[in-house]
Image (cartoon, rainbow, N blue to C red; front, side, top):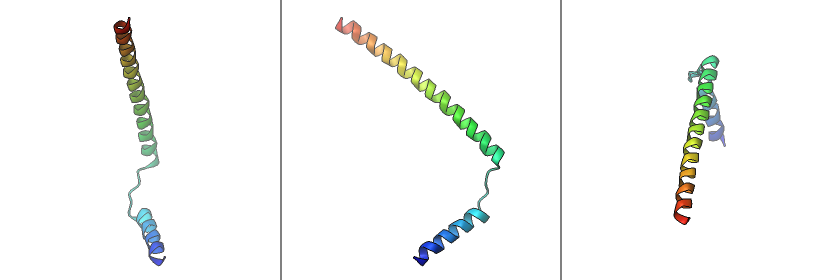
Length: 65
């Protein structure tokens, strides 16, 4: 148990004193960039999926009919 407590203390010390944290304004800006990219990319995938879905439906409607 002492080893685990020592590990927690050393981890906390490492995070507090030796990690260089990104400034809040930059972290917020990058979060917005990631959110916008995620939305744009998901809309692009949705669009491609819709086009392929309609193309496959049209193909099978022609083959079956």
